[in-house]
Length: 99
Image 1: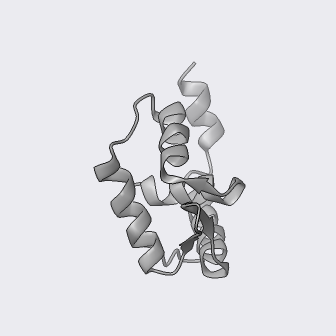
Image 2 (image 1 turned 180 degrees about the horizontal axis):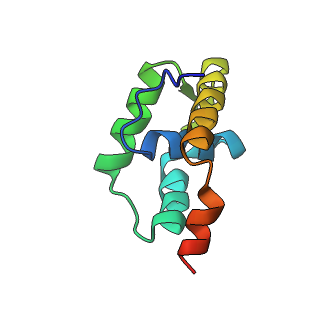
Image 3 (image 1 turned 60 degrees about the horizontal axis):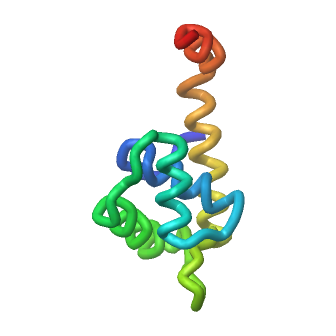
């Protein structure tokens, strides 16, 4: 299955993945990304991605400014995960290389 998402790097993919686990505000998403990357992304990095995902209909934002996936976003994430797994089918070997 070809991924229809035009993800810039992996940030959009990560944001969709993070939001799929729990509805979060932009600040909460930034904190989660900081755990993964070691550095906190700037608002100038995070909010344009959130706007783009919202404009594409992949996420919505409620009155508390918490983002969640739409049905389209869930479908896109599933396709993206499939694409990622096919691309990195040998990820266990990659982890072993890092030891």
